[in-house]
Each structure stands twice: as C-alpha cells, then as structure tokens.
Length: 393
Image 1 (cartoon, rainbow, N blue to C red):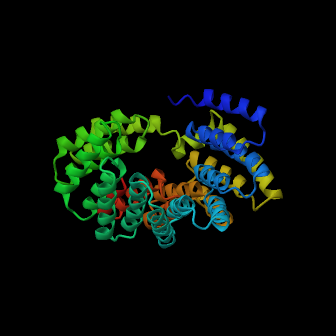
Image 2: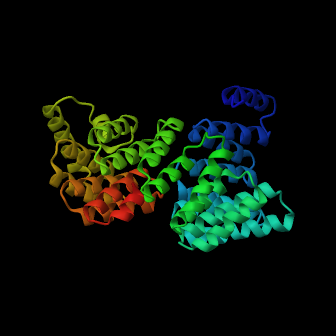
Image 3: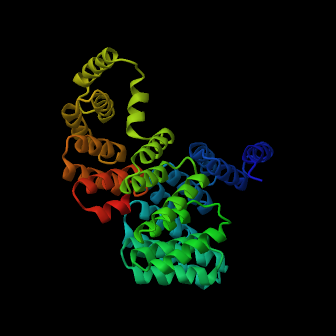
C-alpha cells in the first residue's frame, strides 16, 4: 500500500516497547529511504549500529542509505565492513558492485557481481535474485563495451525471470549499441508490455531507435509517451525538443525545451537564481562584495568560491566566473556540480573542447548526472561529433 508514514509510526511504537529490536530500526530506515528521505534512514541505522555494531544487515542497510545520499566512498566502506564480518554475504558483494559502477570502477564492480552470482548459485538462490544479479553484470559489461557478453548476461537474466523488465530494457539498449535495431525494438516493446506501459525508459529507447531509422513521427510519439509517463523528467523534453529542431519545427521545439526548463529545477540557471535570492543587479554586486571580504579571510573556501562564480555567471561575467570555478574545482575535486557549472561557462565562452572535458569530469564523478550528459552532448554538437552527441542528448 506504500503507506510509509503509518509503517514508521508502528515501528516507532515497537521500538519504544523493545529498544534493542534491530529489525524494527532496519525496516524503519527502509521506509524512510523508499519515501525519499535517506538522511532519516541513516539516522535510524546509526542508532541501530550503536546497539549492534557488527550486524551485517545493519551495515548493508547503512551502505544503501549512503548510496542514496551519493556518498559513494562511505557506502563502499560499509559494504567492506559487512563483507569482512560475513565474507559469503552475496547481497553485500552485489551492493558494493552497484556503488563501484557509480564510481566508474567497472572491473572492480564486475568482480563483485561475479562473486555474488557464485555465492548465490552455491546457495541455490531463487531465480528472481539470480536474474537481478545477471542483469547487473550485463550492465557492467555494456559499460565496458563488451556488448556480446552483456547480451548473454541479459538473456540469462530473462531466462531466469521472463518478467524482468530491467533485463528486457537493458537487452534492448545493448542491441542498439550493436546496431541491431529490429531486435532492439522488439525488446523495447516487450519491456513496455511487461511494465504495463508504466515505465518511461522503454519509450525513450523506442523513440531513439525510431530516430536512428529516420522514423520521425514515431520517434516523436514515443518521446511524448515517455513524458506522459514521467512529466518531471526534463531530459525527455530536451530529447523531444532537439528532435523537433532537427526537422525544422522550431516553434514547437522551443515550446518543449521551455517546458523542460520549467520542470528541471536542478538546472544551473535556476540554482543561481535561488542562491542569489535577489531581484536586481545592484544587490548582486553587494553580495559579491561581501563574498570578496569573506574570501580575503578564507581564500581556499571552495563553497564561497562556488557562490561567487555562480553570481558572476548569472551576471554574464563569464571570464571572471571561469576563474572562480577553476580555483574551486582545484580545491574540491569531488563536486560534480562545480565541473558542470565550469563546463557551462566554457561553453558560453565558445571553448567547446575545454567544456567537453569539464562535463566528462562531472560525468565521471556521478555517472547518472543528466546535466553532464546534456552538456557533453551540446559541446559535441558544436565540435561536429553529431552521432555521439545524439547519444548523450
């Protein structure tokens, strides 16, 4: 029923009766994570670990919460602690592999998934779990561009669980990379059917195949369907707008791109406006002056430099913004937003190769960052690398 608040209330009552009950704290943390509150989940798990510091289930649950918070290195440490205590825990190996994928440590991730599969096979695990692990292994093989091995993994996943939507979708993605468009489209249709038409991802893949086959009307319909399934995913508005622009439908293209900007609250221009909290140029200058005073006392504060750079960017002072972003990225090499922002400024200055490098760094830090992919695609278009740009956009 997905009534997470009610479940949490019930679990809190259980903890009041038995403060040492570990399962209640783990379940409560899961409820918080599923309703999009990973920090609250982490708080519950920290209290559980204070009572049960060597319980693998608590460590794994904490690792999952840290992953949701994008604290990937901390998450890996928790998985390692769980594995050290219980080396044969397949879920810990698989979870660690998922985090390593996000960190782009693909060979290490592959080792984790293979270990998880071997452990589950030895235990006679249910086919649904085995299907999930083979699907994850296939994703790593795809990222390593080993498409034939990836295809075998996704096919094995579907053999173990014919209703595995993710495996069908990922198989279609691999077939697109292999330029086997007819079979890829069959997989997309199968994934749509399995998910009862609720998942937007197969529609996106379906639209992309139509685009590659120059079936423009069908591609437009597929992207529109993806938007209907998830109206808050800005990337699909951008895909549709870009497609319409390519066929000369400029006004319609602009309309969809604007809709994308309206729902994309993470987009850099919106972040700048929110951080500035001002209405005119003069107030911007006042804030810049205050920041310069703070930076005179703490010249290596990456957070202050980022705020200054955002202000300068919003004022259109791109050369000055670039200097601030460059220094901030040297001080904080783990902030993907900084590299995205620097890439955008470089793009505005016409330095497309440097912009591409900056967006690549952002993508390496967080491989699911749609802003990095979008920025990379725009830079590639300016550099004339059209096919790769389309894959990013």
